[in-house]
Length: 118
Image (cartoon, rainbow, N blue to C red; front, side, top):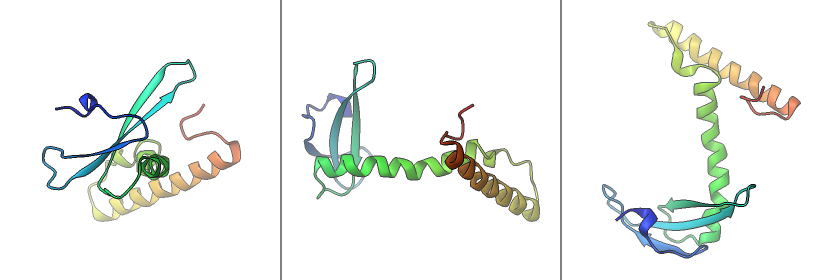
């Protein structure tokens, strides 16, 4: 059955098993209201079965911030577009991408805008 078909109240958790995963997971549903008044639903899953729904919802935004780093390095600093073939040029490209990310972060802090804002 799909995760969206599980009947789960907001701020509650349920132990689930996902296909291909050999251990139980904990599912929580977060319901929120968008700026236009519509409602959104986010299904949050964790392998820490001792967490409460509020703990899962508190951890989620922090985790998302961690995921923003590799995404920004890949897209904003062109990490994935390396035309390099040798170890030295690959190393230089990696260093240049990381330096570009540092500069973008510095600019983001100064302007209070994100990396893709124009």
